[in-house]
Image 1 (cartoon, one colour):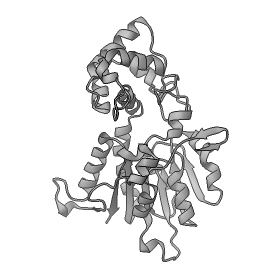
Image 2 (cartoon, one colour):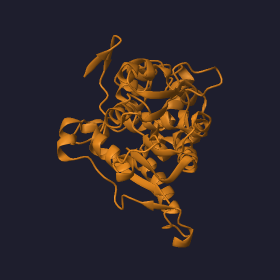
Image 3 (cartoon, one colour):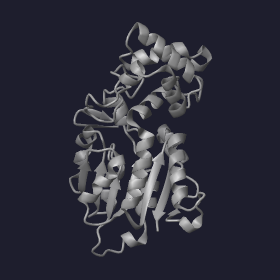
Image 4 (tube, helix red, strand yellow):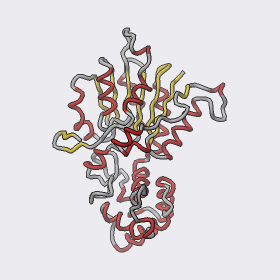
Length: 319
């Protein structure tokens, strides 16, 4: 842990070396020449990947995307000696990088894990461990037109709630939880994370609330589902991958770290389509899949950072 600008920072970058080695450690980038290395960090977060790339590849140009302006304020002191341009946007808008470029892109990183700093310090209700307003947007200052978690739990129909909790959270108690949310809001608004946790707790049978070894907190999947819905995370991922691939130079690579099955399914399908493994056949192949199986965290990394247990790294190269 470090302390930056008065904020306790707890984020630890997952699969750091594996990602950078797989994305950039190739002979063509170490032979010199006039061409500078250009990398897009599509999910800047705590700046872990970008910071390490700057350290290893002096002269690199980094374009860093994040919806949350506060992440840049927390991390900018790491980049005094790095040519980095910060773009306050979702990675579904990666085409905005085009106007910032004079060279084509060598590599793009998507680290799909929510930054621990956002969980712990945003005050936007991402974590069920703190009593905060139900917001859950990645934007630091959402506008009135932006959907929030408050809107989802207080206005969406019961069936829609059940569908997203089951579909995005893979929560088997989705119908019970959706019913409990609707019943609760008829009496009073569900305003905070603790209000929502209490509602979920009442909906789930006692045997599923017990904190047995290896069992995640009973509110985890519901919070995940609402966050995904609020930010349209899966739609953004599909768009971001497609736009990012178009920006890559020949032999450029995309590295994606996913943390749950819904994300990984989208990444795997996208890679398969580009790599000719889908129904189109190899004659339509426009990329090589570098990771035939996803790279997982080592035993040592999992011991030091349990959050890395679910991470999967996949890498694709444009041809």
